[in-house]
Length: 235
Image 1 (cartoon, rainbow, N blue to C red):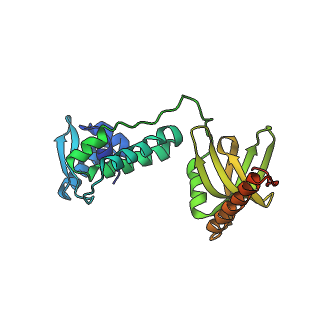
Image 2 (cartoon, rainbow, N blue to C red):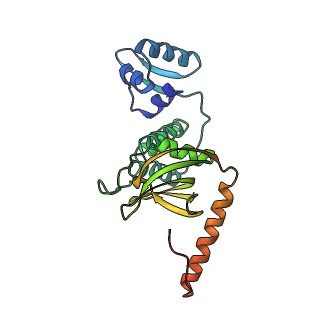
Image 3 (cartoon, helix red, strand yellow):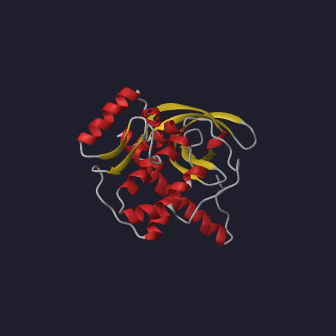
């Protein structure tokens, strides 16, 4: 599957050396894998020393999108270059490569020549030093995390949190969590999390209920602000 993803994603023809590097196998193993895919029905043009190109993919059903839908998909995936970390960006590129592989020729060409692009100035968002895969996994699995956090006043603290959702923007990457130290919702700048480790506590199946409660609270605060009443402080 890694080899198929690489053939879908990389500009053809792709050299055996590049494919071997992308899939983490030896070149000899790569040639065997190419033969296996061909035997399974994949039409792969090329040979050793020339490069390979996937001309027909038997593993994905055909799909069809309007021109605007194609632009929207490519714009969304393209935004990961400025919003996402490296594993997330790569996952998006692999996904869009599989989508393009299922399109008719005309729509596939449209996907390769879209007119909409995303842009942001360099170094606009602070760099993130923690393991984003661990953070995402904790959100998915509804497991707690211990974090060491430096707030906006440069005060360090350590606390156990229940991670609920990640919010991406060009300026910041934020984590909404239920803080066990404060027994309340808090929003953390992910770039200011200095360290994190598994907390060992599961809060399943409370994530959906907590998010619903948070949204209700925010709606109440916004209504209070619009009527001049005191609203709860921002997190």
